[in-house]
Each structure stands twice: as C-alpha cells, then as structure tokens.
Length: 258
Image (cartoon, rainbow, N blue to C red; front, top):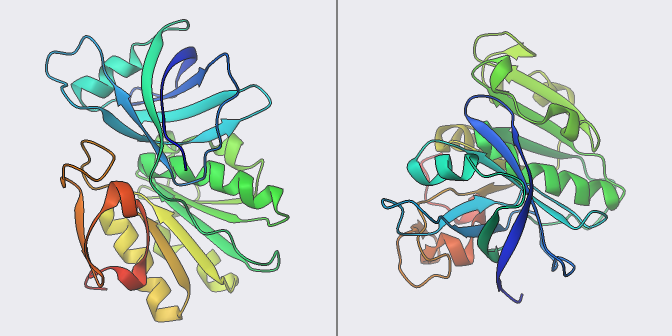
C-alpha cells in the first residue's frame, strides 16, 4: 500500500478528559485508503525533546467528511504538545503504516473486539468496517473507572458495547476477561489492543477456547518503516519489526507465555 507524507490540517481537538484528546484532521485532496489497525507517524514541531515522530493508531476515517481521527493520550512532551493544537494548525503525518486486522470471510462469524485505555482506538474503525460488511461486532472495553472509558457513543453506532471497570463505577466490576459476555456468546474471532497484560490475558483466554485471536502490539517505534529495529518482537518466524510486519499479529506467532 502506498505511503504518504502530508501536512494535514487540524479540524478540531476534542478534550475528552484531562488525559485524552480526539484530533480530527483533513486535507484538500481525498484521503487515501486506510485499513483498521494501521497507524500514523506524526512529526511534533516545537518540542526540543521530541526528535522522533510519534506513532498514533488510526482511530477512524470518515470519507464523507474527509477526516482522519486520532485518539491521543497526552502522557509525554510530544503528545502533550499535540493536545495543545488548535483548529487550523497543521500536523505533518506519514501514513498509512503497518498491517491491519483480518476481515472475516463470512458475515455469520461472531467477533469480539477487546480494548483497554487508549488501545480502544483502532477498534472503532475496525467495528465500522465490520458493520459495513454486514457483521455486528461485540465491543468489550475496559478501564480503571467510568471516567476513563472513551468514545462509548461512537462504539455504540457499530455494535453491542460491553464495559468493565476496575472500581465498578460503570459496567461490570473487574477486568475484561471477567466479563459475563465471554460465557454468554460463542465467539469465533477476537481482536484486541491495549496494555500488554490485558492483551496477554485475552490471548490466554482465546488460546484456551481455541478462538482465532489477533493482538495489536504497541512496541516502541521510531521510524515506522522497519529500518531502525527499535520495535522488534520475537516470534515463531524469528525477529520481526512490529511497525512493518505488525502491529497486528496472530497470537499463534507470538512467543508470549500464555
């Protein structure tokens, strides 16, 4: 798939809470094809401590409004500067990078999309693509508390939304792997993104149940093109660059102790 380096214009910056922002970008030309699970490398200008581009998952692509959405956790100097952007500002982006989640062959397969924290980001666009294909996914979204859950109204547009919180302030109390939907529905495929302990727990569940499962890895990335070897993951096929051969990987290829 062709890669682009473009100056995208900021349409809006929505501050969801004190940590997360939703940045909507556009350009004069029609946005190119992007697939769920791919990501963008963003150049952060004006930050003396941010020398490398920052990898951000593609949250959503709205071709009707020609907008690319990025859900950003403002946790470092680079991402905090991104959170300070205003409408009309410009972000230099290299995209789309990496591979994508696997689309099912038939519409009858029951699919579970599991996300935690900012890891919910790529699942929204995947859910939209599944919905367009006649498949209604189940979203299982976890967070520490209700205030940490992100974009619930958007997820509800494309499937059933199940929620867990560690403090029990919303949905079922506990971790995503404790949710009752796992006992109520026989899923044929799982896709997950979030903190590694969460993904490992989901992978362990999927392996035990014999369910096909893909994880979206969040290894540290620098170049985004497989040149710098910062994001290498050990797999059954040897060392692979997550930014190029991933970030989406079938758990059968991972050497995780699950």
